[in-house]
Structures are given as C-alpha cells and as structure tokens.
Image (tube, rainbow, N blue to C red; front, side):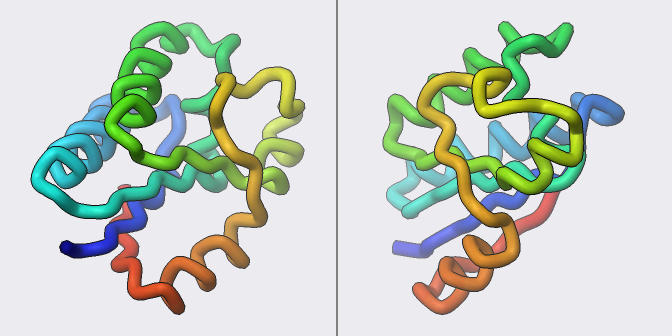
Length: 114
C-alpha cells in the first residue's frame, strides 16, 4: 500500500485540474492506497461552500470522505482568502499546511501536487 498526500494548490482558476486531483485521489483510494487530500493556498477556494461551483466540489469531497479519504485545509490559507471555518464544508479538517505536509512526509506519504 502506498501513502499518497494529494496537495491541491489550484483554486477556482482551473476547475479541470481540481477535478483531476479528485479523480486521482478517489481512484488511488479505490485501488487500496492510503490517501489524504490537503487544500492549501488558492486551493482552499475549492472547500468554500459559498463558491459558485460548491455543489460539484462538495459531491467529490463527500465521495472521497465516504471512501475514507481524510480531507484537510490549511487554516492560514483560509484566513488569507478572507474565509472563516464556517465557510468551509463540514468534515474538512483544519491544519497548518507546512506542518501537515512535513508530518505526512515523515510518515511515508508521497506528495502529489495539483
């Protein structure tokens, strides 16, 4: 089993790339890998439940969570985007992006960035 940390730094400017990140993560999980997703920088726009495409993204997030993918967002990036915890989808965990990435790498996760 491979441990994969999918890091999404792409925001609303490239929805196709974000969809590839979701598909990649879900297929990897379905194939027996341990997968976590981390939204950082502009990527936190994707977990904003008030975004114009929020229903589409929520469906993908929920699908991933239902499969056991942990979904996390950088609290500093959330604040920098002018968002609050209340703006973020339920079930998303709040972390420090750099610290979280470092900890996952120490645990053997391979980061894949979108």
